[in-house]
Image 1: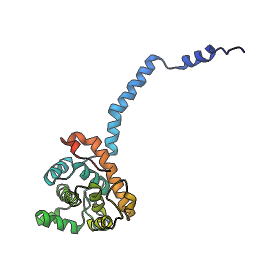
Image 2 (image 1 turned 90 degrees about the vertical axis):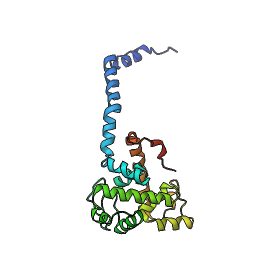
Image 3 (image 1 turned 180 degrees about the horizontal axis):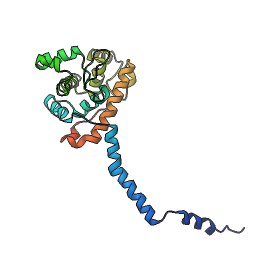
Image 4 (image 1 turned 30 degrees about the vertical axis):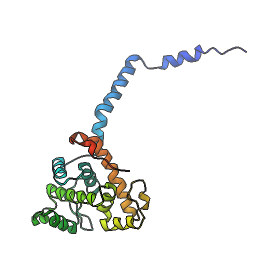
Length: 211
């Protein structure tokens, strides 16, 4: 049986390949996209505002700065004037009773109540609150995120009753669909902000989320 002449198939394929100059230009454009355009696109998708207030309050209260960023992104999309139908206020969507508790526990000025929409004040109180939740749940940030949404009492009851073990991998055990979705969103944005803005934090490696 006569073997087919492969040359008539290979030559057109080779001729169809782009020139070395075009390939080099394409490689350069691809490199430019990944080194310049892609980071800019990511920062547009995941914006960060009030970073000075976030970093200051995180340092002062012991909060994870990336967790504060993620909560603000989910709660208000960095809109300091946001007010929910339930009465949550400002960047970190603080309920009035949460504000009262933070002022009393942190010995902050009662004037903070009237400044709750001020970014620096809202971020400081929210940072104090989430930092306290993390300590309350023994360093478990996933449980603290759930408590930020559903309240610490509910989360403690779920864990005490064995309905949820406080981990991300077993979020299906959380009875509230809103809270399951909330934890997933916050952890998603946490990872994005940690990747994009880790250069702002000297001890980036010390801030991580458990599974």
